[in-house]
Image (cartoon, rainbow, N blue to C red):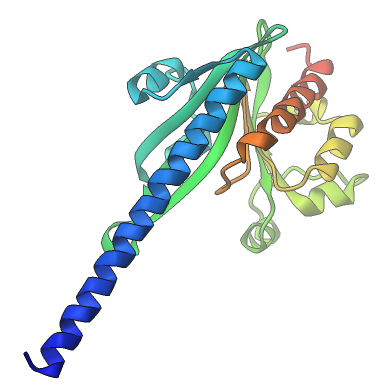
Length: 227
């Protein structure tokens, strides 16, 4: 066996070992995450579901939120569901793929979906404002700003079908809360509210804090809502 052939065999073997290692690490990480979700469900009195068809059934009324309109190969995993007071809640991991082949990218995030009984929030979409959003706003694209809260307007892009109704629920208490909790994406429509940080899986140990944050957000949004 010549040296060139031996070198090719060594390189191929190393690549295979690397791929197997990556797969094993992913499997172990997923298993550890599932176990952490199971423990959290027991501690918090929630129901934990891994079956994707069951998760789809649970989330079938998730509406037309922007998060679910992108890419393909949509996958839902690690659903925690239950109630807090009069709120029906679902916490789940969600991923989707954009592009294809060598140009494909998979985006993952943990989302919290809360259903409010007998509530009709105005439709809106709040997300961190990036450079392209700032340029788009200067070119006349919609962005609801609050002149007396420049910090909020600097951090977030806010759009909604009915601006007057959106402004009615975004009072100072809510604006201050959002200023203090940057990088949130929040979508609302009717009785449902969805919140997440784009492209970020929440660590299981951080989920109780994020759930408290989401419940606080709901209370601030619905406090002035009489729709």
